Amino acid sequence: MTLPLDKFGAAMAQLPLVAILRGLTPEEAPAVGDAIVESGFHLLEVPLNSPRPLESIALLRQRFPQALVGAGTVLAAQDVRDVHAAGGELIVAPNFSGEVVAEARRLGLVSLPGVMTPTEAFGALAAGATGLKLFPAEAASPAVVKALLAVLPKGTPLMPVGGIAPDNMAAWREAGAAGFGIGSALYKPGKSADAVREDAQRFVAAFGGALRA
Image (cartoon, rainbow, N blue to C red):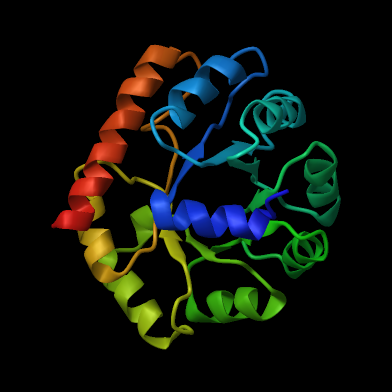
């Protein structure tokens, strides 16, 4: 059985893009999941403020055992335990909570807390975070990524989330961003699986172009 941290490492090496499926329903999960995973994504996040999120996480985890599936908007240690019970292996948050990071680490899950400042970033790493989510990226810039990475431990995965589009990934990558979380530009409630597939493929192609740039 592949451990969550090993799945995360493999995904970061292959295609470090997190599909943020806010608003996904369990009924949509199989078709939308197929569209995203078949396009090359290995990191899937269902925010806990979605309808019946634990059901969707359980469905996606069963359908895509090779992918790293988990939850976003994880705000409390009990949420971490609930996600783990549903089979989730990825814990993403908009903020840094020491309790959330510690519980994820205790359960062997991948933890990506949200940070914006060096104080938050170092605090999250000290608590045991696997990587860092720069959020909201709309309030930051590639220059912020470069400045943070100059002082953070070498190899720290820093992933901007918020406002990421196929045409702006190259600048972030050049500054050192390890990957990205992609939300409404990839999926939003009511969007068809075919449309999700088209946009997923657009992001995959653009990320490959950013690597070559």
